[in-house]
Length: 359
DNA sequence: GACCCGTGGGA
DNA sequence: TTCCCAAGGGT
Image (cartoon, rainbow, N blue to C red; front, top):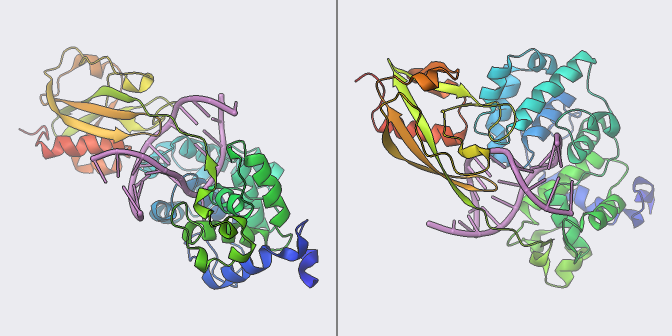
C-alpha cells in the first residue's frame, strides 16, 4: 500500500489513515489551532496552550488563552512581564506551579532566541515534560513524536484491549502508540487521537457506532470498550479543617503572598492558620484582633477536602498579622488580586456578609 | 513508582 | 449530592 511509507511499524497505516480522514472532517475548532489548510501556529501559542491544557479542559482554558495572547502576544512579551501579573492572570486555572514554570520557561526561551525544535531540547525547559515536549515537537515543528496523554492512553488501551492496570500499563501503551503513529502529520495524528478521545472514545458512554476506528478496535469487538483503561483503585481523600482571616480597614482587605512552593504557591491569599502544611490548621486566630466567625467554605482539592472557617475582623486592627508582611488591597479592585478559587469563595462569602470595612 | 499539586463540568 | 477525571510535571 502506498501509505505504508508514511508509517513507522504499523502495517499500512491501518489506524492513522482512517483517523486522519476523520480528523479532516471533524477536527474541533480551538483557539490555539490553525484553521484547516493554514500553516502550523507559532510555537509560542502551541506551548502556551499545551501548558494550560495540562490536566485542564479545553473549555476552562479557552478564556485564559485568549487573555494571555492578547496581553502577551509573544514569548518575549511574557518573558518581560511582571511575575505578579502573570500569577494573577493564571488565578482560577489551578496547578499554580505551571504559572511559575511558565515564566521561567519564557525567560529561558527568550534569552536563547527561540523555542528548541526537538523533543530533547524542549524537554529540558521548566514545565515541559514527556507529553508536552512531544506535543510541541509534533504540532509546532512537524516532527514525528509519540504523543501520549490521558486521551491517547484511553484510545490505545481500548484499541488493543490492554488488560494491565494503569500506571503499569503505560509501557505497553507507549509501544502500541509508537506503532500506530505515522511519520507524516504526526501532530495532526496526536490531535486527532485527543479529539477522538474527547468526543467519541469518552471515559464513560463511548459512542462506538460513530468511531472511525471501531473495525480496528479490540475492545469494541469484545463489547467491552468501557472496561478500558483498567485503573488502580484510588484512595479516599482525607478531610481537613482550617481558618482564613478577613481583616478589613477603610475599604481594603489584608492579603498575603503565599510561599513559592507548596499549596497555591506564589499566589495572593487570605492569611490562614496553617491548614495547608499537611494537616489541620492550629484553629487559633492571630493575637490582637477582634475576631468573629463569618461562615464556612468547603473546597475540594485533589488529595484532600477542606472545611475552611472564615474569621472576620472589621476594625482593621491585628498587630500580629501586620507584622508578617502583606498588603492592603482595595475591595473595589479585589477581582484584580488574582485570588485562587478557594480564597475567591471566602472573599465572596465575606462580602455577602456585608463586611466591607466601611461601617 | 508514589505522592503532591486545582478546578470545574458532566453524569 | 457525590463521584469521576481532564492535552501532566516535579520531586
